[in-house]
Length: 434
Ligand code: NAD
Image (cartoon, rainbow, N blue to C red; front, side, top):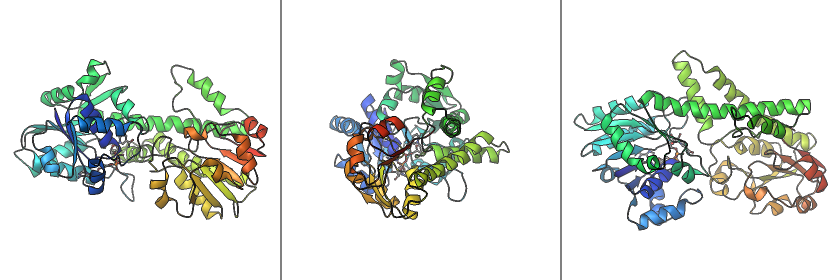
């Protein structure tokens, strides 16, 4: 199959690379020339484990290429994927469909024969029908069908998620489009990963419902964590005790500083708005959004309390600022709420993150970037663990405590315990929910 991937960001690039690895001929298009220039030189603009090698392999095999020229990429393609951003529209919670519709119009004018236009971006219910109308209006003679193919990959584990998905969802009402999509995903079907065919609206809804459910699960355990702090229960054991129940499952049950990232915040906001638009309020989701905001703010209080009621004049070492490990993505990371509050409170903040600096520098003004956890902790008054990168999971706590002015730790990912910290010489330790 010949595939054009419009939008070469976290989703478009991973999907394009993986489709080419399936054996398809893929052109990844982006309107950002710097991104394409990097890719043409074999450089990967994002940090995603394993992506550079897979990309190089498929470029070498002649199946994968990059371009800013949408027109020639779309000409002759069997399927054109739209994988552009759908950020929150400024001022309200709606998904901003400007990029999707602009891409649809450009695609319409570039079509040379029958193609399936597939929306991979996360879009509100009804958007694929709008995409269809936009294309029809821009090019009344175009031969095409639309399909919704929401993406479920997780940054940091994106290749494995794409190659070994729990399921692939394809929404379409056209048999011809279904056949093309079936052919594209054939390698997964042969390995018995389920492909679920639905109508357009159902596929669109599955994506929002899945993300809102996961955000709810995280927020639920974070709220229970708060109650654990009041009652003396230990959230780690509560999570384990809950997660062993097969009906609940152990994933997304780790208490922490609140969810962030490029998807959950914007997708919960968008679902809440969809509910309001249809006079069908999504009350659980609306509450989740509010509770998650409160949780992030509560983390600031934890650090301030640990520092004796004020961070003014204190040196604080922050370990990890990306919204989760194994990505350089800083979008909506809890660090963007917590770190500026510490800086604003008068703290001198040192940050160490294996991949976060490139994105984080502009987003976190007034902090000092350091390349090593022990250097960051030198003469510091407090260490705050915000993202559980592997390199922060096995720190030599004794060495760390010795380097600090006043050894105190806010472990917002519950990597260590009060006992570990005290034994290593920390005078104070606080986790989440214990
Ligand atoms: P991103 O911002 O990393 O990438 C989007 C890219 O599209 C950018 O490089 C941008 O320059 C390009 N672009 C925009 N308009 C274009 C046009 N007309 N022609 C060519 N290129 C264009 O976004 P992302 O994180 O990859 O997310 C894309 C979509 O996938 C969103 O709807 C998101 O909700 C969804 N999604 C993201 C993830 C994730 O983990 N990031 C997971 C599942 C779904």
